[in-house]
Image 1 (cartoon, helix red, strand yellow):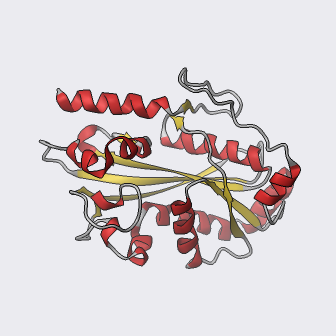
Image 2 (cartoon, helix red, strand yellow):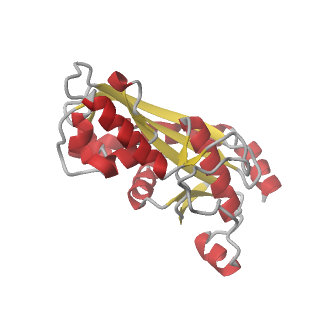
Amino acid sequence: MALFAVSTALVEAALHHCVVATPRWGSYARSPHDRRGLPQLVEDEAALDEMTPCGVDERCIYFVTGNAKKEQEVNLILSDQDLRPFRVEHVDLDLPELQGEPLDIAREKCRCAAQRVQASVIVEDTSLCFNALNGMPGPYIKWFVSAVGNDGLFDLLAGKEDKTAYCQCTLAFSPGPGAEPLVFVGRTDGRVVPPEGEGGFGWDAIFVPNGMEMPFGAMPIETKNQISHRARALQKFVAHCKHNEDAIMELISTWS
């Protein structure tokens, strides 16, 4: 009963920060708690030019995130991938926090990002799912970490024999504003342990991937980037770009 009460409170706290993701851009409902306007096009052309240094370029895809740690990790992962002729540049922009299923959240964030920067974009949304709790915290993991930290996350499984979990990166790509995003999902299965290590970020200190003896937060970043959920989603995205180069170029030209 206590676990249920704590979990319910955390879910309510998480949703307090979110708006609702639905399948179509421009039609999603606001949470009653939300006091922000819905995302709009950046109207200041100078700000937009500064935000997107390579402009509208069929070879340039913008990774839109306000999370510097994610941006650094994506750069490291892609440095080992051959994405040519495409390249990925970062846009430092916070997107609305959405509630819903991970695929819907990623698609809606991607539509929003493409609308904001008026270019081709990728975004990602991360979930950490405890099997004993029917997939909770899921896509609301950011707010759970903020509310209770890694010790509190581990305590959610107190009294549960099943400590298995999986982390999932849902990566969405849009060739431009108005286009329907494509989604690439990377998943890593493992288990939840007491916090260990000071590397990584977020919940890295409590998640041990299957086949490993230490959590993401205690292993070298090079090791993490070979097996992580984020690396697996990016590998699928890179493979798609390599196999569909001409079609993607044409799509970006169409929507630019």
